[in-house]
Image (cartoon, rainbow, N blue to C red; front, side, top):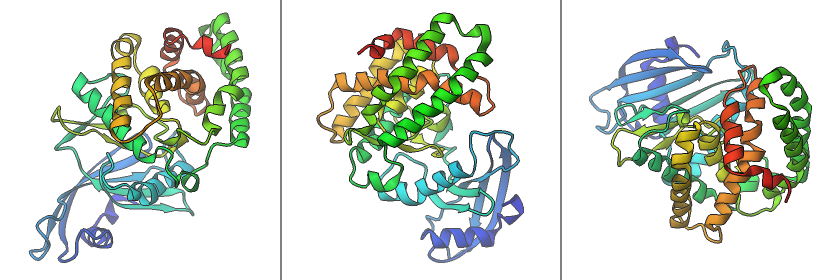
Length: 347
């Protein structure tokens, strides 16, 4: 897809097929495009024929894949997952904390995709992964994840939606870590201290046991898989609702994985220490408010710490494996220390 294809006729068909333009047609469209890391985005302003309904959307956001992007983190499999999320998963939720998606399409022959959303720029702005906003907006982010996770918490449809964790999948994940870790350690050189290298080995040896948390068949939910504030739209009104975006990495896990990824991996030590307990408590209260029972605060805190080992500690390695700098390396180790995660390796 390219900007020349974003015509009034194409938009008319897309909105008609989604049920948002029962009559009339798009008369004109103005587009402003810009590239992002993995996609090209276009902000669209629409006008309509006189017989279109007054509530037809006038500002849309179109995202289509950049096959020329020099990155290995998002490919055809991830683009397919994002389209499946909006066509199959989000469609099952009555009021999800997401931008409304009018159209999502994936093309097997090329691995390309495009998605058409409401343009939320008048009411929301993009977050920055490493800089938490003010506390009300941080709380709005916790509320959004709590609402999403609670809806899918032990949902009977989970086994049909994604790759449900199993002993085989856990063994494959551990084998991948074991394959990458020595080369990652070599690439880090003196940046990796001897004590950190030993702890990496201990963490790897503990992964088969720690990841059994995912095979219990309970207290699981759909997770974003790449939760950070750059994947959240923050409300301009401090009392508004945050929206979660960019669902290429979604899967099945325990909800605190998303929160540990968002805070323990991406936030600097001072911000994390000041905010994480209070915000995680807000998230836990939100789960209970949405009907999640038999999940105590201690359970939530344990899962958060567990994810700091099973996910956060190894994420710099996965960044490196996809051709990126081993970002957040110091954050991951500071969180490991502050959360006393070493004790989880000896239980």
